[in-house]
Image (cartoon, rainbow, N blue to C red; front, side):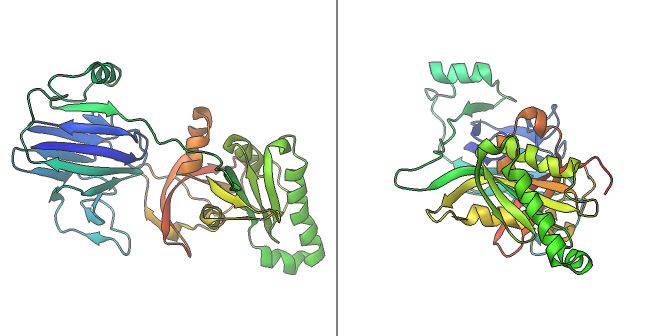
Length: 341
């Protein structure tokens, strides 16, 4: 039996783990795990795989968040989120085509029952496979890693106004109370000032689109790093002493119309970020961290991938969350102001 585990999402997306003989291995965040994945939502020793001649089994190793196999949760120390079915056992027999989700990592299982040929690429590696193995040595006996070429994403398509952009959404927290306390006119001026600060920012040349929303703004940028920099400026220097904000940063394709408007599913996702609450969390990170309700920037996984490594290390994983009014979830990271709110 030959088992192939393909990583289709997560920090090591594009890798294949191939087992062509009986093997056992541990999957986790620890550098000592046979298959080590730098994913903050994964336990140090998350689950074990046991590949026997006739079957392949997965067993949760008392991880914090458990393992989802085809939407059913196995193991896990914390209670399963509402809507997620919890299996009564922590072990499952894997079948061809099964989907495994741990943290931000998604795996697809491919099982072939025929015996491998002694002349195949595993026993007789080609020059390309040999080079791959030198760069990515096998994590354990019986498994090899093959680096796949990631799918290229085009920022524009012909005859289309769709662009890949960084989306920064800002919302003034408690806007209704501020309107009652300050009045429509003064509150409107404060909100307009936030828009003007983006428009006249030193990095405004990177701006693609900017629109006020009544209690904040939507701003699209060519680069995620600049979008985060401008978002940080509202945490470091508030628009008003009594004003607190919530922001979201996302990356994806947005359609820009000739009427100077923006739309698309990814933009709707970005607009849901500012209102995310702890009650929306489906999976907690392995290392628990504070989850502020204001003066924060929540960053999606797609946006995190666009940020330089130095900035990524300054963000904290806060879990996987349900996005309200959308049939979707998102792994989120936090950039929080060092100033007390």
